Image (cartoon, rainbow, N blue to C red):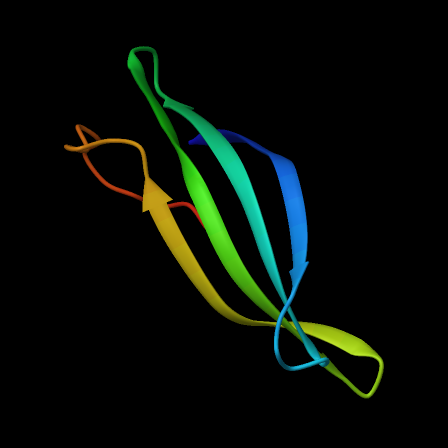
Length: 79
């Protein structure tokens, strides 16, 4: 299986906690396997990034897909 993953429209917002930031973005994941299997999955991400001793960590992630029904046979990707 081959994946092409694109993330864009990245926006960073301050939160009430000065050590945390909300990061919103959109993504498109194109996946193909064998000769005829191809899936395009798109949506948005809302991440909570936390700063701990100068390092940034992903504390929480919300994935909102644009699709009502996923026609993929399986999902083997990290959004």
